[in-house]
Image (cartoon, rainbow, N blue to C red; front, side, top):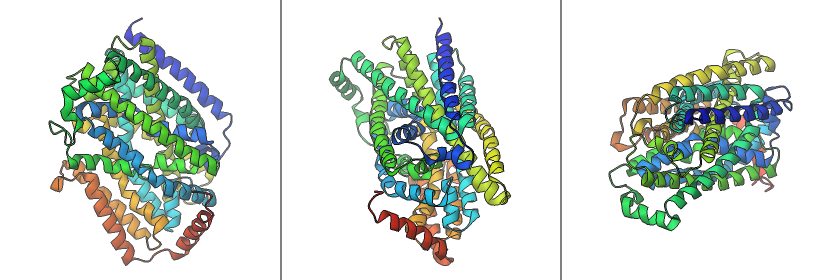
Length: 500
Protein backbone atom coordinates (compact mmCIF):
# COMPACT_ATOMS: atom_id res chain seq x y z
CA UNK A 1 0.00 0.00 0.00
CA UNK A 2 1.25 3.50 -0.83
CA UNK A 3 2.15 6.09 1.82
CA UNK A 4 -1.01 8.00 0.94
CA UNK A 5 -3.15 4.89 1.27
CA UNK A 6 -1.65 4.03 4.67
CA UNK A 7 -2.21 7.57 5.91
CA UNK A 8 -5.87 7.46 4.86
CA UNK A 9 -6.27 4.03 6.48
CA UNK A 10 -4.92 5.34 9.77
CA UNK A 11 -7.18 8.37 9.61
CA UNK A 12 -10.15 6.13 8.85
CA UNK A 13 -9.47 3.95 11.90
CA UNK A 14 -9.09 7.05 14.04
CA UNK A 15 -12.39 8.47 12.82
CA UNK A 16 -14.23 5.22 13.57
CA UNK A 17 -12.76 4.95 17.08
CA UNK A 18 -13.35 8.62 17.82
CA UNK A 19 -16.95 8.50 16.67
CA UNK A 20 -17.56 5.35 18.73
CA UNK A 21 -16.25 7.08 21.87
CA UNK A 22 -18.20 10.27 21.17
CA UNK A 23 -21.43 8.37 20.55
CA UNK A 24 -20.91 6.34 23.73
CA UNK A 25 -20.52 9.59 25.63
CA UNK A 26 -23.71 10.92 24.11
CA UNK A 27 -25.75 8.28 25.94
CA UNK A 28 -24.80 9.95 29.23
CA UNK A 29 -25.66 13.50 28.21
CA UNK A 30 -28.54 15.23 29.93
CA UNK A 31 -30.13 18.55 29.02
CA UNK A 32 -29.13 22.14 29.60
CA UNK A 33 -26.14 24.42 29.24
CA UNK A 34 -24.19 23.02 32.19
CA UNK A 35 -24.61 19.47 30.94
CA UNK A 36 -23.57 20.15 27.35
CA UNK A 37 -20.73 22.62 27.97
CA UNK A 38 -19.40 21.43 31.37
CA UNK A 39 -20.48 17.75 31.56
CA UNK A 40 -22.63 18.84 34.52
CA UNK A 41 -19.42 19.59 36.50
CA UNK A 42 -18.96 15.87 37.18
CA UNK A 43 -15.64 14.98 35.51
CA UNK A 44 -13.32 12.72 37.50
CA UNK A 45 -9.71 13.64 38.27
CA UNK A 46 -8.05 11.23 35.82
CA UNK A 47 -10.20 12.22 32.85
CA UNK A 48 -10.02 15.91 33.86
CA UNK A 49 -6.21 15.77 33.87
CA UNK A 50 -6.08 14.10 30.46
CA UNK A 51 -8.61 16.41 28.83
CA UNK A 52 -6.74 19.40 30.25
CA UNK A 53 -3.51 17.97 28.80
CA UNK A 54 -4.91 17.12 25.38
CA UNK A 55 -6.63 20.50 25.11
CA UNK A 56 -3.41 22.35 25.95
CA UNK A 57 -0.87 20.17 24.13
CA UNK A 58 -1.61 19.34 20.53
CA UNK A 59 -0.07 20.03 17.11
CA UNK A 60 1.75 22.86 18.81
CA UNK A 61 4.06 20.45 20.62
CA UNK A 62 5.44 17.69 18.37
CA UNK A 63 4.99 19.87 15.29
CA UNK A 64 5.18 23.49 16.47
CA UNK A 65 7.51 23.30 19.47
CA UNK A 66 9.70 20.69 17.76
CA UNK A 67 9.96 23.07 14.81
CA UNK A 68 10.83 26.00 17.06
CA UNK A 69 13.49 23.87 18.80
CA UNK A 70 14.86 22.89 15.38
CA UNK A 71 15.39 26.49 14.34
CA UNK A 72 15.80 28.22 17.72
CA UNK A 73 17.58 25.82 20.03
CA UNK A 74 17.33 25.65 23.80
CA UNK A 75 15.39 28.89 24.02
CA UNK A 76 12.34 26.88 22.91
CA UNK A 77 12.64 24.75 26.07
CA UNK A 78 12.71 27.79 28.32
CA UNK A 79 9.83 29.32 26.41
CA UNK A 80 7.61 26.26 26.90
CA UNK A 81 8.66 25.68 30.51
CA UNK A 82 7.40 29.21 31.19
CA UNK A 83 3.92 27.81 30.69
CA UNK A 84 4.45 25.17 33.38
CA UNK A 85 5.92 27.81 35.71
CA UNK A 86 2.80 29.88 35.11
CA UNK A 87 0.68 27.04 36.40
CA UNK A 88 1.49 28.15 39.92
CA UNK A 89 -1.29 30.65 39.17
CA UNK A 90 -3.68 27.72 38.99
CA UNK A 91 -2.89 26.93 42.62
CA UNK A 92 -4.58 30.22 43.50
CA UNK A 93 -7.21 30.50 40.78
CA UNK A 94 -8.37 26.91 40.21
CA UNK A 95 -10.14 26.56 43.59
CA UNK A 96 -11.60 30.07 43.23
CA UNK A 97 -13.01 29.36 39.78
CA UNK A 98 -14.32 26.00 40.96
CA UNK A 99 -16.04 27.39 44.05
CA UNK A 100 -17.52 30.38 42.23
CA UNK A 101 -18.75 28.21 39.37
CA UNK A 102 -20.60 25.84 41.67
CA UNK A 103 -22.06 28.58 43.84
CA UNK A 104 -23.31 30.85 41.06
CA UNK A 105 -23.71 28.44 38.13
CA UNK A 106 -21.22 30.07 35.79
CA UNK A 107 -20.85 28.45 32.38
CA UNK A 108 -17.96 30.50 31.01
CA UNK A 109 -15.18 32.63 32.54
CA UNK A 110 -16.83 35.65 30.89
CA UNK A 111 -20.10 34.77 32.59
CA UNK A 112 -18.23 34.99 35.89
CA UNK A 113 -16.73 38.38 35.03
CA UNK A 114 -20.15 39.76 34.05
CA UNK A 115 -21.61 38.77 37.40
CA UNK A 116 -18.64 39.88 39.49
CA UNK A 117 -18.51 43.35 37.87
CA UNK A 118 -22.33 43.58 37.64
CA UNK A 119 -22.22 44.30 33.92
CA UNK A 120 -23.20 42.09 30.98
CA UNK A 121 -21.07 44.33 28.80
CA UNK A 122 -17.92 43.04 30.52
CA UNK A 123 -18.69 39.47 29.52
CA UNK A 124 -19.65 40.51 25.99
CA UNK A 125 -16.41 42.45 25.45
CA UNK A 126 -14.30 39.58 26.84
CA UNK A 127 -16.27 37.21 24.60
CA UNK A 128 -15.47 39.26 21.50
CA UNK A 129 -11.80 39.24 22.56
CA UNK A 130 -11.88 35.43 22.65
CA UNK A 131 -13.71 35.20 19.35
CA UNK A 132 -11.09 37.38 17.63
CA UNK A 133 -7.90 35.87 19.03
CA UNK A 134 -8.81 32.19 19.32
CA UNK A 135 -9.34 31.94 15.57
CA UNK A 136 -5.59 32.10 14.74
CA UNK A 137 -4.88 29.70 17.60
CA UNK A 138 -7.39 27.22 16.15
CA UNK A 139 -5.85 27.80 12.74
CA UNK A 140 -2.43 26.87 14.13
CA UNK A 141 -3.79 23.45 15.13
CA UNK A 142 -5.40 22.95 11.72
CA UNK A 143 -2.13 23.89 10.02
CA UNK A 144 -0.26 21.35 12.15
CA UNK A 145 -2.59 18.56 11.04
CA UNK A 146 -2.36 19.58 7.39
CA UNK A 147 1.45 19.65 7.47
CA UNK A 148 1.65 16.32 9.28
CA UNK A 149 -0.64 14.46 6.88
CA UNK A 150 1.11 16.02 3.91
CA UNK A 151 4.51 14.90 5.16
CA UNK A 152 3.56 11.36 6.10
CA UNK A 153 1.72 10.78 2.84
CA UNK A 154 4.79 12.05 0.94
CA UNK A 155 2.71 14.85 -0.51
CA UNK A 156 -0.20 12.61 -1.44
CA UNK A 157 -2.56 14.41 0.94
CA UNK A 158 -2.57 18.16 0.25
CA UNK A 159 -2.23 20.41 3.29
CA UNK A 160 -5.67 21.89 2.70
CA UNK A 161 -7.31 18.46 2.61
CA UNK A 162 -5.79 17.68 6.02
CA UNK A 163 -7.11 21.00 7.32
CA UNK A 164 -10.56 20.19 5.93
CA UNK A 165 -10.68 16.72 7.53
CA UNK A 166 -9.65 18.11 10.92
CA UNK A 167 -12.29 20.83 10.73
CA UNK A 168 -15.05 18.33 9.93
CA UNK A 169 -14.05 16.09 12.85
CA UNK A 170 -13.89 18.99 15.28
CA UNK A 171 -17.38 20.11 14.29
CA UNK A 172 -18.81 16.60 14.57
CA UNK A 173 -17.34 15.76 17.96
CA UNK A 174 -18.21 19.14 19.45
CA UNK A 175 -21.82 18.70 18.40
CA UNK A 176 -22.31 15.01 19.31
CA UNK A 177 -22.13 15.27 23.09
CA UNK A 178 -20.46 18.52 24.05
CA UNK A 179 -17.77 18.44 26.71
CA UNK A 180 -18.53 14.87 27.72
CA UNK A 181 -17.54 13.49 24.32
CA UNK A 182 -14.53 15.79 24.18
CA UNK A 183 -13.37 14.72 27.65
CA UNK A 184 -13.73 11.01 26.83
CA UNK A 185 -11.94 11.26 23.50
CA UNK A 186 -9.28 13.50 25.07
CA UNK A 187 -8.44 10.84 27.64
CA UNK A 188 -7.88 8.29 24.89
CA UNK A 189 -5.95 10.75 22.75
CA UNK A 190 -3.68 11.95 25.54
CA UNK A 191 -2.57 8.40 26.30
CA UNK A 192 -1.76 7.83 22.63
CA UNK A 193 0.15 11.12 22.58
CA UNK A 194 2.45 10.42 25.49
CA UNK A 195 3.06 6.72 24.81
CA UNK A 196 3.76 7.08 21.07
CA UNK A 197 5.94 10.17 21.61
CA UNK A 198 8.02 8.37 24.24
CA UNK A 199 8.57 5.35 22.00
CA UNK A 200 9.50 7.62 19.09
CA UNK A 201 12.06 9.46 21.21
CA UNK A 202 13.65 6.16 22.29
CA UNK A 203 13.92 5.05 18.65
CA UNK A 204 15.45 8.35 17.60
CA UNK A 205 18.02 8.23 20.41
CA UNK A 206 18.90 4.70 19.36
CA UNK A 207 19.40 5.88 15.77
CA UNK A 208 21.77 8.57 17.05
CA UNK A 209 23.80 6.11 19.14
CA UNK A 210 22.16 6.64 22.52
CA UNK A 211 21.38 9.63 24.68
CA UNK A 212 25.03 10.36 25.53
CA UNK A 213 26.10 10.25 21.89
CA UNK A 214 23.14 12.45 20.96
CA UNK A 215 24.18 15.13 23.46
CA UNK A 216 27.80 14.99 22.32
CA UNK A 217 26.88 15.31 18.64
CA UNK A 218 24.49 18.16 19.25
CA UNK A 219 27.00 20.08 21.36
CA UNK A 220 29.73 19.56 18.77
CA UNK A 221 27.62 20.55 15.76
CA UNK A 222 25.19 23.10 17.21
CA UNK A 223 26.70 24.54 20.39
CA UNK A 224 25.38 27.97 19.41
CA UNK A 225 21.82 26.72 19.85
CA UNK A 226 22.49 25.86 23.49
CA UNK A 227 22.72 29.52 24.50
CA UNK A 228 20.36 32.49 24.63
CA UNK A 229 20.65 34.58 22.50
CA UNK A 230 21.34 31.68 20.15
CA UNK A 231 24.06 31.79 17.55
CA UNK A 232 22.60 33.27 14.40
CA UNK A 233 20.25 35.56 16.27
CA UNK A 234 17.08 33.41 16.27
CA UNK A 235 16.45 34.15 19.94
CA UNK A 236 16.84 37.48 21.64
CA UNK A 237 15.73 38.54 25.09
CA UNK A 238 12.85 40.57 23.67
CA UNK A 239 11.71 37.68 21.49
CA UNK A 240 11.86 35.29 24.43
CA UNK A 241 9.81 37.61 26.66
CA UNK A 242 7.39 38.35 23.82
CA UNK A 243 6.67 34.66 23.25
CA UNK A 244 6.86 33.52 26.87
CA UNK A 245 4.70 36.20 28.53
CA UNK A 246 1.43 34.99 26.97
CA UNK A 247 2.41 31.43 27.86
CA UNK A 248 2.93 32.32 31.52
CA UNK A 249 -0.69 33.50 31.83
CA UNK A 250 -2.09 30.91 29.41
CA UNK A 251 -4.12 28.99 32.01
CA UNK A 252 -6.06 32.16 32.85
CA UNK A 253 -6.17 34.02 29.54
CA UNK A 254 -7.34 31.17 27.30
CA UNK A 255 -11.02 30.48 28.05
CA UNK A 256 -10.96 26.93 26.66
CA UNK A 257 -8.45 26.18 29.45
CA UNK A 258 -9.87 28.24 32.32
CA UNK A 259 -13.34 26.87 31.56
CA UNK A 260 -11.89 23.48 32.54
CA UNK A 261 -11.56 24.87 36.09
CA UNK A 262 -15.34 24.47 36.42
CA UNK A 263 -15.55 20.75 35.55
CA UNK A 264 -13.94 18.62 38.34
CA UNK A 265 -16.50 16.66 40.33
CA UNK A 266 -14.79 17.14 43.69
CA UNK A 267 -11.88 18.76 45.50
CA UNK A 268 -9.90 15.53 45.07
CA UNK A 269 -10.58 15.53 41.33
CA UNK A 270 -9.55 19.17 41.13
CA UNK A 271 -6.17 18.43 42.71
CA UNK A 272 -5.69 15.32 40.55
CA UNK A 273 -6.39 17.37 37.44
CA UNK A 274 -3.68 19.89 38.23
CA UNK A 275 -1.10 17.35 39.44
CA UNK A 276 -1.67 15.02 36.50
CA UNK A 277 -1.33 17.85 34.02
CA UNK A 278 1.97 19.02 35.55
CA UNK A 279 3.48 15.54 35.16
CA UNK A 280 2.17 15.12 31.63
CA UNK A 281 3.22 18.62 30.58
CA UNK A 282 6.79 18.37 31.83
CA UNK A 283 7.37 15.00 30.16
CA UNK A 284 5.79 16.03 26.87
CA UNK A 285 7.75 19.30 26.75
CA UNK A 286 11.08 17.51 27.12
CA UNK A 287 10.10 14.98 24.46
CA UNK A 288 9.08 17.67 21.96
CA UNK A 289 12.27 19.72 22.42
CA UNK A 290 14.58 16.68 22.20
CA UNK A 291 12.65 15.56 19.14
CA UNK A 292 13.36 18.90 17.49
CA UNK A 293 17.05 18.70 18.39
CA UNK A 294 17.27 15.17 17.01
CA UNK A 295 15.60 16.29 13.80
CA UNK A 296 18.28 18.94 13.33
CA UNK A 297 20.95 16.21 13.48
CA UNK A 298 19.15 13.73 11.25
CA UNK A 299 17.52 16.02 8.67
CA UNK A 300 19.40 19.36 8.69
CA UNK A 301 18.58 22.15 6.29
CA UNK A 302 14.79 21.93 6.21
CA UNK A 303 13.28 25.01 4.58
CA UNK A 304 10.19 24.84 6.81
CA UNK A 305 11.06 23.87 10.39
CA UNK A 306 7.45 22.78 11.05
CA UNK A 307 8.15 19.88 8.66
CA UNK A 308 10.72 18.39 11.09
CA UNK A 309 8.29 15.92 12.66
CA UNK A 310 6.58 14.83 9.43
CA UNK A 311 10.02 14.33 7.84
CA UNK A 312 11.32 12.26 10.76
CA UNK A 313 8.24 10.07 10.85
CA UNK A 314 8.80 9.19 7.20
CA UNK A 315 12.41 8.02 7.82
CA UNK A 316 13.33 4.30 7.61
CA UNK A 317 14.28 3.89 11.30
CA UNK A 318 10.69 4.65 12.34
CA UNK A 319 8.47 1.59 11.76
CA UNK A 320 5.59 2.55 9.48
CA UNK A 321 3.00 1.27 11.96
CA UNK A 322 4.46 3.36 14.77
CA UNK A 323 4.67 6.43 12.54
CA UNK A 324 0.98 6.03 11.77
CA UNK A 325 0.12 5.66 15.47
CA UNK A 326 2.14 8.80 16.23
CA UNK A 327 0.36 10.59 13.42
CA UNK A 328 -3.01 9.60 14.86
CA UNK A 329 -1.90 10.79 18.31
CA UNK A 330 -0.85 14.21 17.04
CA UNK A 331 -3.90 14.62 14.83
CA UNK A 332 -6.22 13.50 17.62
CA UNK A 333 -4.66 15.88 20.13
CA UNK A 334 -4.88 18.78 17.70
CA UNK A 335 -8.52 17.98 16.94
CA UNK A 336 -9.22 17.87 20.68
CA UNK A 337 -7.80 21.38 21.06
CA UNK A 338 -9.86 22.66 18.16
CA UNK A 339 -13.12 21.10 19.33
CA UNK A 340 -12.48 22.37 22.85
CA UNK A 341 -12.01 25.88 21.46
CA UNK A 342 -15.13 25.54 19.32
CA UNK A 343 -17.13 24.35 22.32
CA UNK A 344 -15.87 27.22 24.46
CA UNK A 345 -16.49 29.83 21.77
CA UNK A 346 -20.01 28.56 21.21
CA UNK A 347 -20.77 28.68 24.94
CA UNK A 348 -19.27 32.18 25.12
CA UNK A 349 -21.37 33.36 22.18
CA UNK A 350 -24.56 31.81 23.56
CA UNK A 351 -24.18 32.89 27.20
CA UNK A 352 -22.22 36.14 27.05
CA UNK A 353 -23.20 37.66 23.71
CA UNK A 354 -26.60 36.23 22.74
CA UNK A 355 -28.22 35.93 26.17
CA UNK A 356 -26.07 38.61 27.81
CA UNK A 357 -26.66 41.36 25.24
CA UNK A 358 -28.81 40.39 22.25
CA UNK A 359 -31.69 38.43 23.82
CA UNK A 360 -31.65 38.63 27.60
CA UNK A 361 -35.01 36.86 27.94
CA UNK A 362 -33.86 33.83 25.91
CA UNK A 363 -34.74 30.44 27.38
CA UNK A 364 -31.95 28.00 28.25
CA UNK A 365 -33.11 25.70 25.44
CA UNK A 366 -32.84 28.54 22.93
CA UNK A 367 -29.47 29.57 24.35
CA UNK A 368 -28.16 26.02 23.95
CA UNK A 369 -29.39 25.76 20.36
CA UNK A 370 -27.69 29.05 19.44
CA UNK A 371 -24.45 27.80 20.95
CA UNK A 372 -24.61 24.55 18.99
CA UNK A 373 -25.19 26.35 15.68
CA UNK A 374 -22.26 28.69 16.28
CA UNK A 375 -19.84 25.72 16.28
CA UNK A 376 -19.70 25.19 12.48
CA UNK A 377 -19.54 28.94 11.83
CA UNK A 378 -16.48 29.36 14.07
CA UNK A 379 -14.91 26.26 12.51
CA UNK A 380 -15.34 27.65 9.00
CA UNK A 381 -13.67 30.93 9.97
CA UNK A 382 -10.72 29.04 11.49
CA UNK A 383 -10.47 26.89 8.37
CA UNK A 384 -10.25 29.94 6.10
CA UNK A 385 -7.59 31.51 8.33
CA UNK A 386 -5.55 28.28 8.39
CA UNK A 387 -5.74 27.92 4.63
CA UNK A 388 -4.54 31.48 4.11
CA UNK A 389 -1.73 31.19 6.68
CA UNK A 390 -0.59 27.81 5.31
CA UNK A 391 0.22 29.43 1.95
CA UNK A 392 2.82 31.68 3.55
CA UNK A 393 6.24 30.91 5.06
CA UNK A 394 8.70 32.39 7.48
CA UNK A 395 8.99 32.53 11.26
CA UNK A 396 5.89 34.73 11.71
CA UNK A 397 3.77 31.95 10.20
CA UNK A 398 5.31 29.03 12.05
CA UNK A 399 2.89 27.28 14.35
CA UNK A 400 4.59 28.14 17.65
CA UNK A 401 4.84 31.92 17.12
CA UNK A 402 1.33 31.99 15.61
CA UNK A 403 -0.06 30.33 18.75
CA UNK A 404 1.82 32.71 21.04
CA UNK A 405 0.64 35.72 19.01
CA UNK A 406 -2.97 34.61 19.51
CA UNK A 407 -2.39 34.24 23.24
CA UNK A 408 -0.90 37.75 23.35
CA UNK A 409 -4.33 39.19 22.56
CA UNK A 410 -6.06 36.98 25.09
CA UNK A 411 -3.70 38.36 27.75
CA UNK A 412 -5.88 41.47 27.90
CA UNK A 413 -8.47 39.71 30.06
CA UNK A 414 -5.95 38.77 32.77
CA UNK A 415 -6.10 42.06 34.78
CA UNK A 416 -9.89 41.74 34.94
CA UNK A 417 -9.59 38.18 36.27
CA UNK A 418 -7.08 39.25 38.91
CA UNK A 419 -9.32 42.15 39.85
CA UNK A 420 -12.37 39.90 40.13
CA UNK A 421 -10.75 37.81 42.85
CA UNK A 422 -8.24 40.11 44.51
CA UNK A 423 -9.28 43.76 44.11
CA UNK A 424 -12.67 44.96 45.32
CA UNK A 425 -12.03 48.34 43.74
CA UNK A 426 -12.03 46.92 40.21
CA UNK A 427 -14.94 48.17 38.08
CA UNK A 428 -16.82 47.22 34.93
CA UNK A 429 -15.66 50.39 33.20
CA UNK A 430 -12.06 49.58 34.09
CA UNK A 431 -12.43 46.03 32.78
CA UNK A 432 -14.05 47.06 29.49
CA UNK A 433 -11.64 49.92 28.81
CA UNK A 434 -8.58 47.81 29.59
CA UNK A 435 -9.66 44.93 27.35
CA UNK A 436 -10.59 47.17 24.42
CA UNK A 437 -7.52 49.41 24.56
CA UNK A 438 -5.11 46.56 25.28
CA UNK A 439 -6.52 44.45 22.43
CA UNK A 440 -6.35 47.42 20.05
CA UNK A 441 -2.68 47.92 20.90
CA UNK A 442 -1.91 44.25 20.30
CA UNK A 443 -3.81 44.14 17.00
CA UNK A 444 -2.20 47.31 15.64
CA UNK A 445 1.31 46.14 16.55
CA UNK A 446 0.73 42.65 15.15
CA UNK A 447 -0.75 43.91 11.88
CA UNK A 448 1.94 46.54 11.33
CA UNK A 449 4.78 44.38 12.64
CA UNK A 450 5.95 47.26 14.83
CA UNK A 451 7.91 46.53 18.01
CA UNK A 452 8.62 49.86 19.81
CA UNK A 453 11.85 49.59 21.84
CA UNK A 454 12.04 46.03 20.51
CA UNK A 455 9.20 44.90 22.80
CA UNK A 456 6.62 42.53 21.36
CA UNK A 457 2.87 43.28 21.04
CA UNK A 458 1.85 41.21 24.08
CA UNK A 459 4.24 43.13 26.33
CA UNK A 460 2.95 46.54 25.23
CA UNK A 461 -0.64 45.34 25.33
CA UNK A 462 -0.35 44.06 28.89
CA UNK A 463 1.37 47.25 30.10
CA UNK A 464 -1.42 49.37 28.63
CA UNK A 465 -4.12 47.00 29.84
CA UNK A 466 -2.95 46.97 33.47
CA UNK A 467 -2.52 50.74 33.54
CA UNK A 468 -5.95 51.43 32.06
CA UNK A 469 -7.67 48.91 34.35
CA UNK A 470 -6.22 50.48 37.49
CA UNK A 471 -6.71 54.13 36.48
CA UNK A 472 -10.26 53.77 35.13
CA UNK A 473 -11.31 51.62 38.10
CA UNK A 474 -10.08 54.26 40.52
CA UNK A 475 -12.04 56.92 38.64
CA UNK A 476 -15.32 54.97 38.55
CA UNK A 477 -17.67 53.43 41.08
CA UNK A 478 -16.98 49.86 42.16
CA UNK A 479 -19.78 47.24 42.45
CA UNK A 480 -19.47 46.88 46.21
CA UNK A 481 -22.52 44.66 46.78
CA UNK A 482 -21.44 41.85 44.47
CA UNK A 483 -17.79 42.25 45.38
CA UNK A 484 -18.57 41.77 49.07
CA UNK A 485 -20.80 38.76 48.41
CA UNK A 486 -18.52 37.11 45.83
CA UNK A 487 -15.23 37.59 47.65
CA UNK A 488 -16.76 36.94 51.04
CA UNK A 489 -18.11 33.56 49.97
CA UNK A 490 -14.79 32.46 48.45
CA UNK A 491 -12.78 33.72 51.40
CA UNK A 492 -15.03 31.83 53.81
CA UNK A 493 -14.65 28.59 51.88
CA UNK A 494 -10.89 28.88 51.42
CA UNK A 495 -10.34 29.65 55.08
CA UNK A 496 -11.12 26.01 55.89
CA UNK A 497 -7.98 24.91 54.09
CA UNK A 498 -9.90 22.19 52.29
CA UNK A 499 -9.57 23.66 48.83
CA UNK A 500 -5.85 24.43 48.65
